[in-house]
Image 1 (cartoon, rainbow, N blue to C red):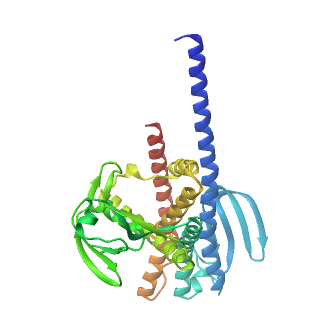
Image 2 (image 1 turned 180 degrees about the vertical axis):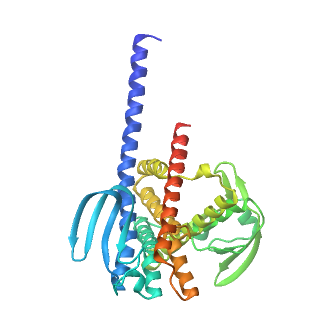
Image 3 (image 1 turned 90 degrees about the horizontal axis):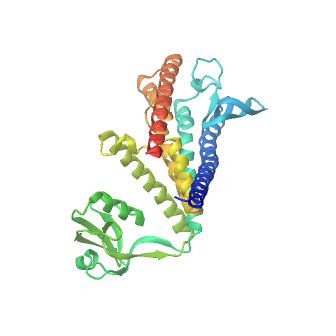
Length: 360
């Protein structure tokens, strides 16, 4: 290799490394902003619900670790902390006994359940809002309606006609076009009992999807019909998009528990930064979709009955309702503390897994 070729190679490597560094930095900045938005919505849910049921809030924090900024307004201190890995709303009597009438433990059971669940609910609401923004930017919205049939494909052979609306595949209800793609991917080419609506009447067909080598997926064989968005279609499709993500995430979690999906496919903070960096390159719409996905994921994860998460707190409250008396706050606090440590260890493992995938 000559001197000039060596110089060109060094310049090319330097340019590639610089571009990769810029992408990583963009990913980190966007990840902090997106995760910050999700945390703000989540903690605002807890905060607003606590105020509505008259629980004293000592601190509303975004982030964990050392304080970067704080301001006291009334009885509540609002803080911004160094590490953008979570947040919290510190309420009177949440993890300890308190004689204050406005303490968390002294409010009615239903009120405490509402406060604990409100954070996850806000994450679902945020995803719903994001999907309204995404769908509003689209000239037309794809629907599970048959457009032009493809010659010699299963839909034509089964008897589908243009204008047919697919409403069910086996026992799986269809609301949006993604439902069909998702079902076909998991069905793996097995025969399907499809129900379509034609001129107001439900019609049954048996159809066997066909694998398309060009697209790398199973298909029924028709072009999807799209419609211009209206207020009704915007809100209904945004709702069903959020619902679809929830179902898909729950199924994926089930696959992880049963071993259908390996732990190596789970992404943590480093993986999320990489995905957000790729999403930024793909376009603003995909970046918004990824934010909605993470928001729904965060909402569902927080509702799991894992110590230190909201789902565990709800489980303790339901147990209180069954027993007729509260669990000792100190003991419950200890359970959540142990759970928090285990979650941190899990986070470390997932982060190391992300790094290993990047190196690989």
